[in-house]
Image (cartoon, rainbow, N blue to C red):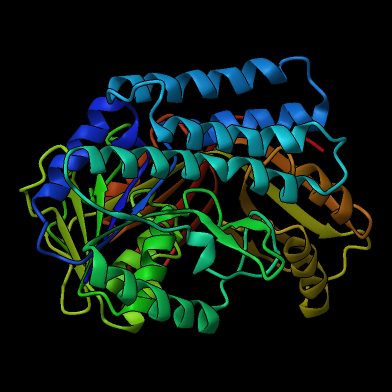
Length: 426
């Protein structure tokens, strides 16, 4: 069994959907589960809808209409007449959103977010499943919420692995006896109370890994708009090269530090069952792409760069200038965990604990105010965090031109640099 994953860029318009159909037509004899993200920038657009609803913005109807018009344009580009049943299914997705926004906000933001933003994946998979049927690629549309069971930690739901594996093994082989092709959604799951959860931003890769693990897939393929895993993001480096092979270990390290080609949670479920992952280009579907497996060594072994922008560096110290020891660190970590704030880099001295974080406008103000109750907190904004895997001294030197280094860490294989030219605030 193969598990395919197509992201938003691969389904951004009618022509992109037709291209996916061409790729899938090459695998008619294989049993495949296809995991699909929301189309284009739909997740961003539905986040605007959510925020407008919470803030009671007068722009809310406009934001909803923009999402509707975008999907209507794709439906028309795929040749669906107004009377086609898929039009009704698309309308039902927007009706789900309408039912939510007709009421006053009464639940927490994260819950509302998951109920609204998850409709992006429902829209994309209903449209694509219907289109594939029109060109004789018969398939079964599967609601991922029926097989991926999670807790109720909205926006960062945790998987109930035992129940999820049981449900998948009960349902999916039976569906494959009827049709080889199954279409399902990335990013989403369901709770025991039948509420929708999401698995974290860009979580469709993780969804595909969940399916791969639970179904003992022979291979998982992530289809991207790049030829494979590159040594750097082409937006930031003109010297990026494709890596032909990567070990699981290197892949985990790269994703942990922020490489965006694969979701950080994706690799471990695959490694646990030794399921190979291949990153391939939907623009050149016959190319081999990048292979990620336990038996690989990273080839070519070149420095790999990960660039994270819009970072903030917090410097946390005791109010009485006592040491930042285990008791203080325990208190600090607890506050990070309670607000679900992820640390990209940390370093401590005798009286200061420094952390580099994504500058999240929703979480960071709460975190800083919470920390200030017990500690002095200073911070720098508008920073860059550069992580270099398999670095040479010369590669680090090339990153330091015209930049001030606020923080630097090096291990045998990895170097991290926090760079800025801004001033410290309090």
